[in-house]
Length: 391
Ligand SMILES: *Cc1c(COP(=O)(O)O)cnc(C)c1O
Image (cartoon, rainbow, N blue to C red; front, side, top):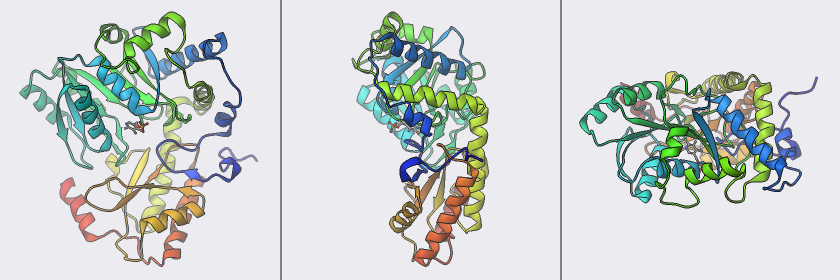
């Protein structure tokens, strides 16, 4: 029987990282030809991509999808600069690097903002959002991160959306590492716009992001943007008129993305994708815990996207060495991004399934043996910090 998830071709290691990630051979193969950006064939590909992403979001004709060249951060910055008017004010809900990046973008853009900073691993809750909005009536927009990829925490966007809607403000979501797997349907959640990119849960290659927004929001965005290249209204208006991207599109990335969308559909769409990622996470986390590793987050907040583990306390453990040993065994892992304690991360997304994750755990076990690490248990301080903050 043919393996549905064969090892990456050409002896590549698996990327246990949250994008770029391991892609299917069909996705790679789709890039083996060239397209003219103005040609009808490519315009049809762009139209198809937009239509399929809207369908994935449960969006009807009141919505539109605007793809934009660049990595995900370009699309986030375009959304902020285009949809927050210059006299608007934003409440940023931060609990990691991507929330901080939103605040940093707003500083660059010169948009007034406040930040609720929950540190490394606590979720922003609906009640505190409601309190912050009641305390400052000049806030026009709230920005939430769906899955904060720096710790892997799954933020409660439904409860946040409710608080924002109750207060009559507007919600923008960075669902970069969520959309395509985590539930995000515009019929279920009150949101102005959200953003994601080609190389996360839809399992394409890097090269563009996309914004899904209400048409009324896109129409009202004219003249807001501080930037020519990141003006979503202009990108949208040009695309509507010509069917083309405003400037050179990432043609090969678009072709790869359509192949990735075919695989996404064949897997049962968003729900099928989520089921595989949850299986990846559950298999990997259970195996790592058996080795003595501890997760930063309790099960309630563990996303099926990426999981943070504490580094073992054993002095024989070194992350740099662990990384190299894992790579030798065919797996690229990810350093941690916590400020307080040493950690590392293992991604669950990409073209991998539970049998692959079992091999990841075996590789981790063998790497510990190679280093002479007797126990993967974290230092007492890490567990004490976790317990203190969870209380
Ligand atoms: C990946 C990601 C981004 C965008 O990062 P880029 O490196 O610019 O692609 C933004 N937000 C979140 C939550 C992400 O996971």
